[in-house]
Image 1 (cartoon, one colour):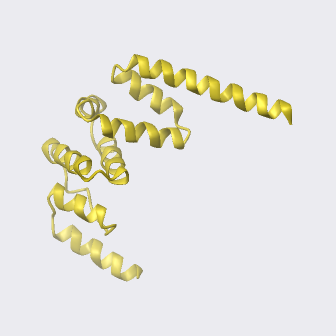
Image 2: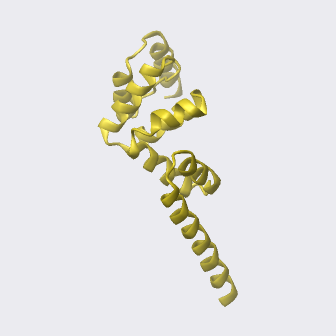
Length: 136
């Protein structure tokens, strides 16, 4: 099983796929490579194809790849046009308790109202946890 996956990855490295083909591999839960996507146009096409797939895991993977490989200003500029990618990132970071990343992203994107609601939710959640532990 592991040897098969390694062989598929080697083959995938030799066969450079388009961003749409890469998203298809992601949807089929097949091994895929993102390293060949170097240009901004390819990365934008990857994000668009991921969003068109309506699969939150694929959208999240594409958004995290963009965050790793682009400068912060380019990443934010690209992300502004895709609210579903932003929503997936925020939900993922909330689930992972990466609240500072959520706050930073919302601030950088100019979503001050959402940032304020998020900070209220965060404080409310902490207050509830303190009350629960006092009652026990």
